[in-house]
Length: 575
Image (cartoon, rainbow, N blue to C red; front, side):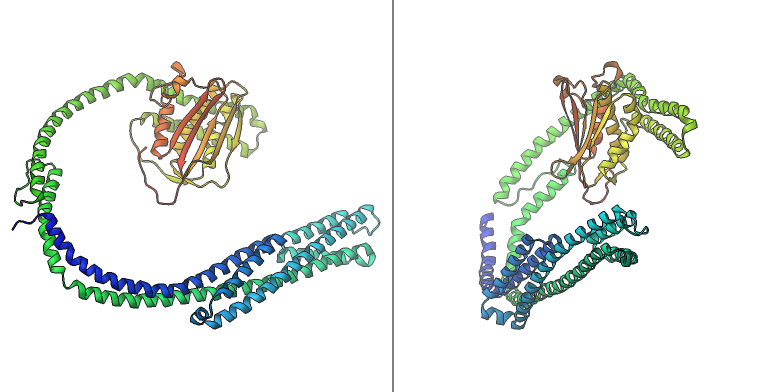
């Protein structure tokens, strides 16, 4: 009897379905039991989250010390109290009555300390104003000169500085410094009645700070106790449900093992019969993928795989003919491509030679200008400035060597030296290279560098090369007095954005679509057309993007987007 595949599948699915029905019934019982216990876990989690909300508002209150932050903290405490009140007595008994007694006592103590601390903070504000007022009076008194000669204006100013440091930092160091200074002032008090109100106000401030610090310490102890108790309840409930789940799972596994004995052999045989012809086709397909187009699928079974095998063999016949034709065409294409490559090399030889001179002009000019300045100012320069001039010459010489190497290896791929870097540092390094050229060209610069930007993974020398090329183009495009703007900031998702903007003559719209093409230049015979093409390739190799926007008569903006480094390791790719 010849069975179709769908007959075999129905038989193979029937028995596992029966096992699944029995397993589903057991699972329903298991889920019902878990749901009953999960309710207590949710209660414990709600309490823990409420306690964490109290601690978050507590931090805000300790930081801002105002009525609004107190109100928010009071709302969080009230919400926590309401949560406990809404829990049924049955749930409290199940979870732990003693823990709830501790929570009620703790939250009440916490609320009292919270209110006491707010009163202390208000007292601090009053005393602070009193200290400042008395300090101003003391300054006025000393300024009039009606005092002992040792009580100088400078002494009072230093004392007020210690006072401000203590109000700002409230640490042991500022306290000790102020205490020492007050001790010196105490030597003048028998002769300076006007000093006494100030020292009294300072002492009152110190006492008030000590009281606030003591209340803060007690408040945090109660907060920690609240957090620990709710955490303990949540952990205990999770442990109980975990134990319950483990026990239930063992029972289900035992039941499933007993049920699965009834059908595995039959299921295995059914699956083997269904899969056998498919496996044969898969084996033949693997060999064909390795290049053997002479194989054909056997025609054995009279099920759905029979027509599949016939179609498969017909496809192979056509594929073999096509493969032979493509082989001949590919060989011809390779010959033509080799001819084109040789022609391209010959055509670009003259342009590349001019490009070397063009790229070397900037560093050589910089070396020349630095040397001239060094000669003119030599007698008046200190040693560190002389070293700085020579270091600039060394940098420009190294840059010249790199330019020659880069242009010589334009068509040769090399491994990138990828390192984690901060984009603002790269901008400043590139600008440092170009400073002499910018100065000589009488170009103004403006930096808009973003703060706290994430790091990027780049070949630093390559990205600096791109920036130098863009800055050079911008300087060449502007008359004296032009403005060069360099900006960094967050771009679209997971990208850092660099903008190089000039106020030059702009690029005509018809040229924008070709600006990154090799050998395309708007400078006529002065340009090689390689700078932006190389820059484009470098940015693309860094998995970034480079775009250009320009308005004739107003200027041009080049935008570079580089991916944020996520610390996933360094892959040395090719540039």
